[in-house]
Image (cartoon, rainbow, N blue to C red; front, side):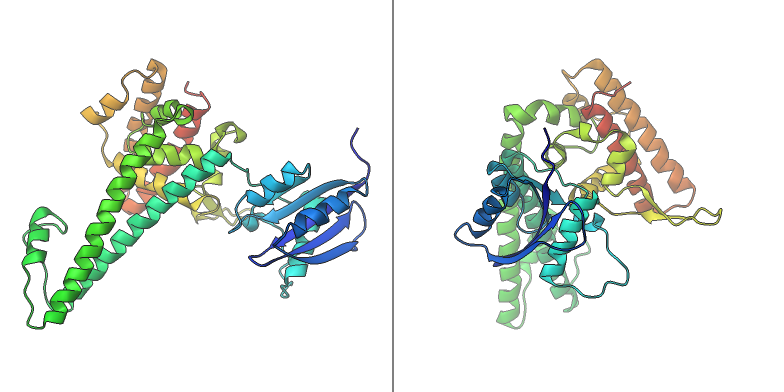
Length: 367
């Protein structure tokens, strides 16, 4: 039988301290507040003391830098703990005062009122691999940034490679052969180039490691299913799996699209409907990866040998489903270009529909 007495605990977590606010099922007043240090199990002891009152304890904190370790720890103590999506918490427009204690009260109140949108706590293995994949993306961003810095350094000196594309073998030979009147300029170029080489070696090593992770029993078959779609290689497939977990928690493809922030924003009132750009809510990391995949649908037919190879051994209905998705997304991409839309808009539109097809493949709705 469910306990009639419930205590709702809001936790505003920071690196050094955690603000705690406790509310009952009814009433506006806070019945307990503490500022606890994040050392020596102070928060755990406080929560266990609350449980000794005989009440059911429900705790809540915002998703953020502290990750999911706190939620797992409290659940291990038998205390229900929810991780809240920060952007979905209610906030009064006139509320201009922000303190840790007020934030903790707001969390407790939102939890009590049922206004918390829960972030799913992933299995520890999924979180470990997710962090590795995000580190890989961070290194790629660093590599891109250093390459741009080197090119800007050369442009400021009127040096530009005109015999082909940047970062080809010819471009690299040109870079290493450049001479400067001042030796410090040559040293600057060399330092940039060494950093680029090191980052490229790291990214290559990470790519090999990601392929090994994708072959683990837990991920191998889902990765193979997702790689049936054009534009989805191992990195994107594995990222989708460890970031989403159970795709069935989204009742429809439209809800999955909304979670990724790929649906149009809307401001409609008084009989007028106004739609704008995509909402960009939810998982930014996955949204960017799917938009990257969406660019591949500028063309589709004929199916490349590489894609045909990835589809070997997969169920016939899944291959037909992925093929149908490819033709549809290609038509959409081209139609938007002919309508005068920017190619970026076409890529995002393709990514939105691709996410729907991904949801279907992972929930076995491939009819």
